[in-house]
Image (cartoon, rainbow, N blue to C red; front, side, top):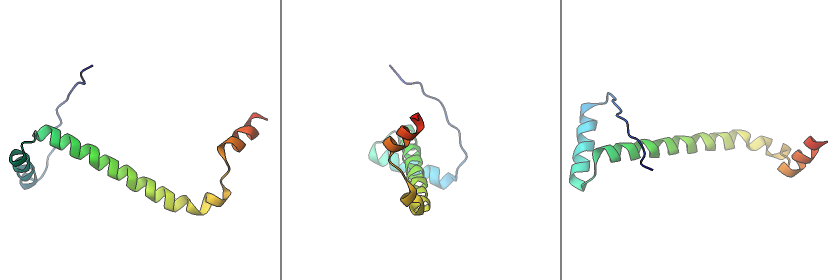
Amino acid sequence: MKQSKTTLAVKMDYAVAETAKQFCRERGLKYGFFVEKAIVEQMAREELREDLIDMKTLRDAESQAVFLDDYLKKRRV
């Protein structure tokens, strides 16, 4: 099944856009694919950053954690 596409219009610094276009031209990359991939990769980095912050924040609570099976057994009572 073919995925649908949409147009994304954003305002950005002219020099950044031109540099990205030149980068793509020099390497034979499609500009749209390059921008789409950059957005997906940045979102993944942001999610990882959030996960790392959560891990650091919740590290002190780890000693209070229970195994999922034990928790579910108690819930069935």
